[in-house]
Structure formats: structure tokens, C-alpha cells
Image 1: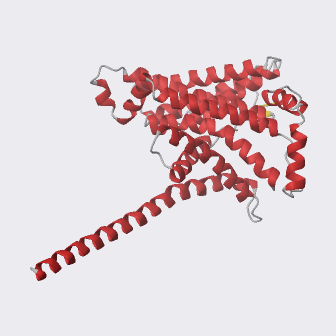
Image 2: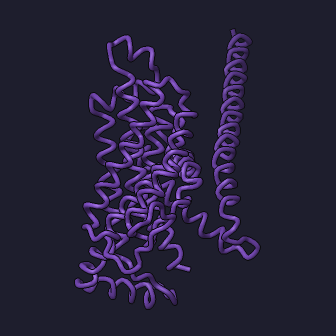
Image 3: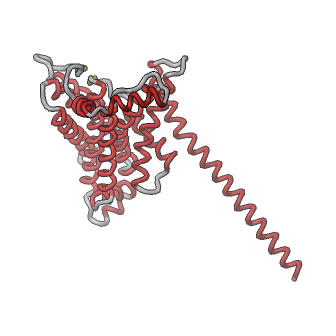
Length: 343
């Protein structure tokens, strides 16, 4: 059980990078970008193809980020220059990326025009490199013995190095996002999402800001896809289906639990939301009458609960606030009436 939950936390940390990308579009830019389902696979396909061809995993991951950035910029150009509806521009790019991703993966095999998946079982990845280094320090054995002997779990994970690497990477991305959103360009992007007409009155080029925001968002999504491909040891053309829903669920769950008072707090909430989502998902799959084929149903239920429960809680709080104000008014009236009687 502990090993399964630990694996869910690892995946949640990686998916948190994708959730941060979704946060940039949906919350900061107020842009319903469905490119995510395609750009996630673009990152995975690019990284897996480069690794399969013998390139360095770090270089492959960097190229995956660039590919995701280009995909996001194309969506932005379809909307800003092509004057296509934001939702439709994302859908069109998502559809186009399906064929593009097949072509990218086809490059990894001789005479293959298209290829639906790439196995990486015997290939070196970022995680295998760092895990090997971590194992040489002997900390893996120490942590495994601690979990088994001290905590009393029968099974213990052996990927402590991977968990540390993904945690460091995600925290760095989170801190960079915090810094960027407080820069002049970041503030302009936030202002574009809040009130496009107002920011235009200050002679800001909102089209360029939208394109840049979408590019950065999908670069993060592709980065997450590249890491997931290396973590799972395969890339598949269908691995991005429903990714936008997972990203939204992470954002909504995190915001509902931790709040959104500051940028720092909000990005922490998004990261935590992604981890909580994966834990809920792993626990749900351990229920006897649920199967892996119910994955989409579980995702939908989690999102529905994440949307409905905060509203119910807020309505309950508002009701209590109204009752408190009413009691205070009655108390003030009673005090005033008592004063009048004394007079």
C-alpha cells in the first residue's frame, strides 16, 4: 500500500508541472486551451524519439519543451491572427497534433512514417541516471529499511532518487513561475487575462502576450509529458487523452483546499492539488468494484466533487455569516431599546 501511494505521489509531482501550465491558461490568461491533450503527447513523443535514437535524455527533454512551446504559440496565432474562437483554436491544434505526434514517433524507426508508441525499457533516461547516482550513496537502502523496519510496511519503494529529482524539478519550475508572474511581462499577461481592453489602453500588445502565455503553458505541459514518458518507460499517442481534465482537477482541488490569496500560495496549491488528485485516484482504484477501465469515470467524479463541494462549503459559510450579522443587528437593536427605556 505504501509503495503504491508513494508511486502516486511521484506521478502527482510530475503532473503538477502540467497543472501549472493549465493554471497559466485557465486562471491567469482566462483562455480555455484544449491544446494540452495534444502538447502533452508532443513532449512525450519528442523526448522518447530522441532517446530511442540515442540522444542524451536531458537534450531530448529540452527539445520536448521547445516543441510544446511551438505548439502553444500556434494555438495563440490561430486565435489572435486567425481570429478563431479560443476554444476552437485549441481543439484544432489538438487534432493537428495527433497526426504530428504519430509522425514524430515514426522518426524513431527505420522506414516508419507513423508509429503509435515507443518503448523505453532498455533506454537510459533522466531518472535512470539520477537514480543510479542516488543508489551509489546508499540512501535507497537506508530509506527502504526505515519504511520496512520502523514504519512496519511490508513493501517499500526503491525509487527515492526519482522522487527527490522530480520534487526538486517541480519546485524550481514553481519558483520560476512565481518570479515570472511578478515581472513586467508576467504582470501584463495577468492583466490581459483580467481585462484585455484595459491593458490595450496602456498600448500593450495583447496578441503577443496571449501567444507568449500559451507558448509557456504548453512548454510546461510538454515538459511534464517528457518526464512521464521517461518515468513510465514508454510514450503512446493516446496518453494525453483527458489530460486537460486532470490539469483542471488539480487546479480546482488545490485552490479549494489551500486558497488563492497570493501567487506563491496559488502555485503551491496547484502542485499540492496534483499530488492529492493522484492519491485520490490511486485509493479509488483499490476499491474492489472499481477497475482500471473506470479511470475516466473516476476522473469525472473527482472533478465534479472538486467543483461542487467548495460551492456547498461557501454557501454554508455565507449562511453562517448572514445569521451572525442578523444576530449582531438584533443585539444592537436590543441595546438601543434598553438605552431608550433607561432615558
